[in-house]
Length: 397
Image 1: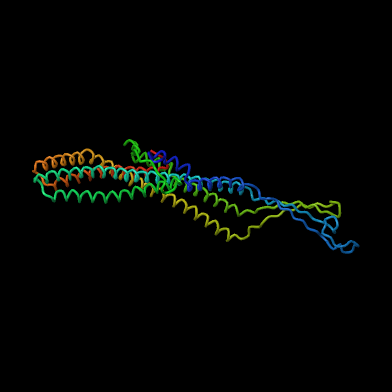
Image 2: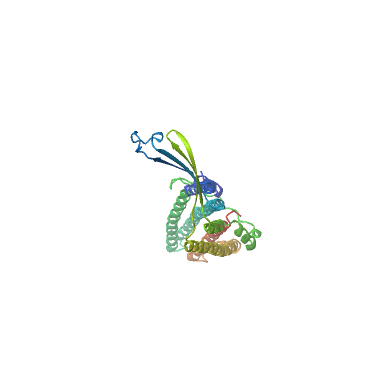
């Protein structure tokens, strides 16, 4: 059963996700367009039956080649101007690169979604577990309050407060169970499984990279090299540049070569050769097309630069947020949580001796709960920001 760790979910997503499968097939289809783009057009066969009425002869009208006045066969082969086929092939290769980039970008996005969904699944499961543990703790406090109330050392209000606290925590448990279910449904959707399909309980979060691997300079270099969106835009710039070159090539004519045997009755006694070319006279039209192609190339370059700037800004934000989450986790674990536990132990001892009221004890219990939940949430925040960074880089750290 998947779900115990993120690795199993990522592998199943790679194998079973329908969105990724569709993009992979589109990339394969794009690669198959490369050869046809550079190939010659198919030749054309044309047949002309001349004098099918057999005028001036005793023969009756016919549609058979050897029973008409003459039959002309024409085979023509269109030939683009030199260099146009190579440019079309290079355009197809650039478009295939875009398709491969979309495949990488889709996988990067899906991988980040799986990592985020698993982090949310872990948060819901462990928040539920933590709440149940603290519910047992409050139940023990209620028993302590009841024992003191039975001996006249505490008020009935202490028992009621403990029961109200338990009721409130049971309500939060229902909310956490709903979040748990929703996280499972999101993961199953990515794995192409039924929404209610069972998942194993999450056991551990991914280990975070060493601080040395989270330096902005090195991450920036990896982003410039591996970011899937930038790869797509680079391929788009290349395709747009080839298209501009092809538009400029349209200043020169394309050709058509043909050969034509002529059949007279049952004999071929005439042969013709044909040469045809288009005359590029519409210069104003071509200049407009050339200016359009140039503007599209400049636009593609500008889009690429804008995307790179935005990706670097997103990287800086996610990296700073990751470091902040790590600092919050460290602060909670090393300072806040030990302090809250000491406060609770002191309050419990004081309540048992009658030196502290029950409200103070409950407040100390809430501080422990908040410190543990905040620590868990900081860990999840770090995982989610790490997933965002890896999506920008196009690879795992």
